[in-house]
Image 1 (cartoon, rainbow, N blue to C red):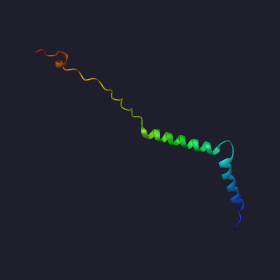
Image 2 (cartoon, rainbow, N blue to C red):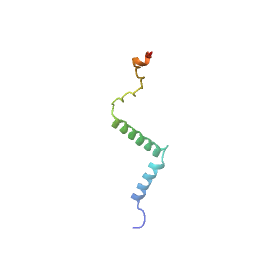
Image 3 (cartoon, rainbow, N blue to C red):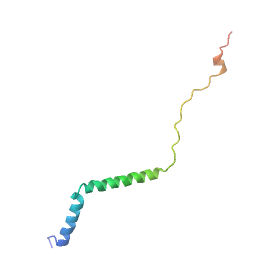
Length: 71
């Protein structure tokens, strides 16, 4: 009961192959997961256009500032 059977060794071999086999299987899986999360976040944001930033405009001058009163 204390040793691994053939089925246990098969499961261990599959896990090891998934993690370390081939060219970057684990990094490829993580990259795909990151792309999925990014797409999910973009989907939550929606397609609503953001309002344009408000620009400061100078205030109009009053008539009294244009023509000084002569006394």
